[in-house]
Image (cartoon, rainbow, N blue to C red; front, side):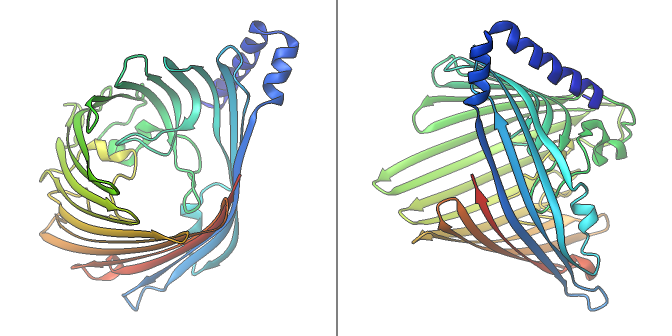
Length: 387
C-alpha cells in the first residue's frame, strides 16, 4: 500500500465497524481499548582494531505507543507510532544510516478474531516467522480450528525495521530489497507470499513445513523439526533441525541456494546451554535470507555467506532477576577470492530493576582473517520501561 491506499484502507475500516454496531457499542469498544508502549534510552559504541579507522557511536532516546480497540463483533482497529531522538554522536556514528527516521507509524491495522478458529490482520503489523521478521505492510491469517495444527498465511508487500538500534526510513517494497534488485529484479512484484504450518502429532514433536514465494523472483520450501524431551523434573532437552532451499526464477541473475541448520539445547533449572551448526550452499543461502535477521549471533556478518560453515556454543543463567548469556562461534566462508574465517564472541547481561523496568548491556567481539573494519567490538546498553 502506498500512503494514499493505506489511508483509504483505514478509512474504509473505520466506516465498516460503525455499520455493524450501535453507537453505544462502538463507544464502548474505543473506551475499553488497550494501550501499550515503552520509553527508553539506548547507546552503542564501536571500536575498530584498525588504528586508521576512528571509533564511533551514538545514543538516543526512544518511545512507542500502541492502541487497539476492544473487539466488536470480532473486529478491532490498531495504531502504533515509534519515535527516536538523538542524544549524542561520536565520529558520525553511522546514526543517520541506522536511525533513518525520527518518527514512523509502524502499526496501522484492522483485525478480525474468532477465538480458536481464525485470526486475520491487515495493514501494518509485526511479523515473526522463520525467515520473515520486523514489521510488514500486508495481511496475516492464522487458522487454529484443527487440533494440534496451526496454519499461518502471509502476504507482505512492504517491510520496515523498527527498533532501538535501527529504524527504516519508510516501509519499502520488498522488491526494492538490495538482494533482489542486485539480481536484476527492477520492477514491482506482487509481494511475498508465505505459508507456514505447525503440526504436533505427539506432545514432544513439532513438524513445521513452510513455503516462501515471491512471484517473478524466487520460491523457497523448507522443513523444520523440533523435538522436546523432559527426562526428569527441571531438565528439558530440545533438538532442532531444518533445511530450506531457495530456487531463483530464470529471469533473475541470482543463484539458487540452501541452508541446513541443526541445534541442540539443554535447560536445567536456572541454567541453559546450546550447540549448533549451520551449513550454507557454496552458491549462498539464496533470497530466503533477505527478509529478516535469522542468525544466532549479535552480528553474524557472514553466517549466511556463500559456502559458510558455522558452529556455535552458548550458555546462560538466570538468578535473582539477572540473566547472563554467552555465545561463541566460528564461521568459515568464501569471500569471493578464498576461504576466510570469522570468529565472534557475544556476552549479555539483563536485569529487571522493578516490574516492567529493565536494563541490558551486551558486548560483541568480531575477529576476521581479513584486516581493516572487519575486526571490531561493539558495546551496547539500554534501559527501558514498558507499559
